Length: 316
Image (tube, rainbow, N blue to C red; front, side):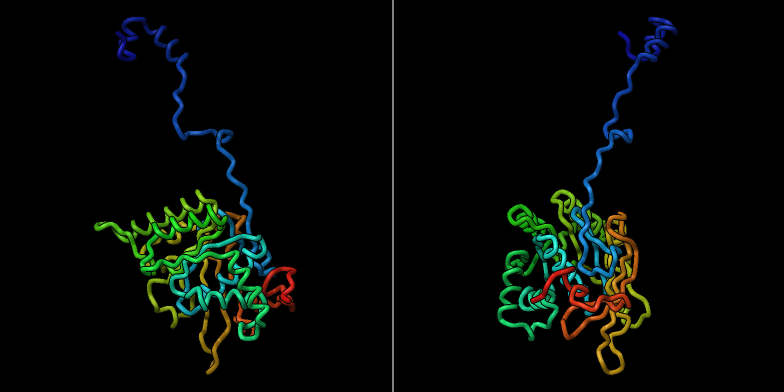
């Protein structure tokens, strides 16, 4: 009985052992591949966010996880409500929204009505409101848990139903801190955040949807600073920056211009894992009170409604 190479050497000699080694075939190691064996990834078909003058600097796509932060009241929800409306309308998609801080009715509904017509809600006609509400009914779903105690597991289960039944392509969780954490008794916060973000990444890729999380920074001291927060400032872990495919910050340098409200705002694109998603940049904007939406304050801003809503779309 031959147990090892030494037994083979004693029984058959050195030349026979050498020939045996030369004739041996390598055992395949699971997961160790040559480049030619690596499967080509799906093509990233990026969505433009509806601001033509951004010139591709910011895009979003399926199978990605994006994280958005910024001080409360700086416009995170409003700006991305506008962006997601533009994307869903342009590409004829549906989205599911866990709007746990901004009420779906009347606040989110108002934002989408205004974006559709680039007009403040109080100026809209009954016909325009009916048209907007029909679109909202057909293209959006809302996560509203009766006991007001949503956790990530419940959100992902409900969102999966939205994907399978209604073809949802986007899941937004806003804000993260309103979820009830299913954190283990002895689990560190950074480990919990890492595990939760892994679940969101797996959901995004497995269900082929874009998952976006809006999360407040951990400290409220940025109002007196001259610079914006970063993804690292989100409570819990540096994993917010490490694991996201994209990272955004919405920042208002000043809340007041003398005694008047300041309308200036900035969108920072701080992370883009893939070139198909655009690149790091700062985009200057302002909030137009007459229309109730964000517009670019770039000097190249087109002077018609296509700059504020859908490219080439009539807002009759």
